[in-house]
Length: 300
Picture 1 (cartoon, rainbow, N blue to C red):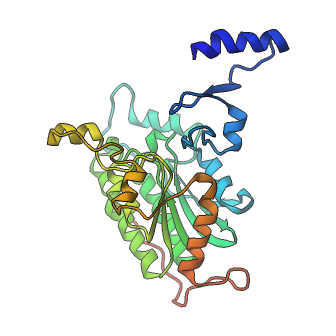
Picture 2: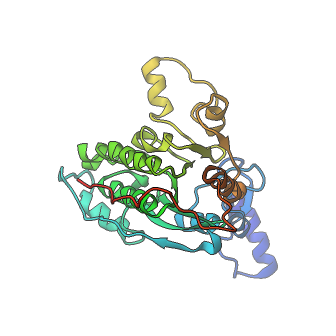
Picture 3: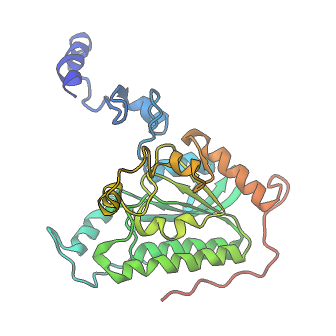
């Protein structure tokens, strides 16, 4: 940033004065080209030079995918739990309280709305909340979203952005993996579409459970999708991994995911998939399942 700080900013201030905000521009972490933040925001955090897809907030994703940005949130149990009385540089309960000051109940935002008219329930992972890690509250949120979709006949969309299980909760965090799989089984029993949008990163216990069980797996360009980190794998097998290993394009070429879609095309792509999977013309009729209304998912 020295070039921006020492040369570009002084030149602009010489022309327009000192009322130039410091957060007017930055650098793309991929191509290192100067980029204006207004342009970046209008392009949904995609670099117009190299196409690098930067991390998008949950609110921005909702505006991107749901009609008119309308999304009704579903509340879920997010009571502070600290079974291990975990503490490193800070107590776990204090980390949770600090994260909740600027975020929702926990690392997922759950709700429903319409995507190009299609009724859809969704679970969005928030990386800003402790790395989007999956603890008991996230499991509750996931089940709440799946329960709503199954009982109301909504398609189910999950957008993981997570480092995996939340180690501070020990075995309780790992238990969320089978819980989310049971929730997905309810969606499939109801013959409803289950779509997963893999974003950067999708790793650990998240990738080892619900994230790879979708009817369709869509990934954003350049997303890291893996269980263990590449350095851990290389240290275990004592071999150099292929170039681009664990990136969405590599997984697509090896049959692990179905498609890699540019962010600006996501809404159209997801709505087309829902239309194909439901075999319904949403313009003329409401979607409903032929089966009886599903009972709420059991919670333990």
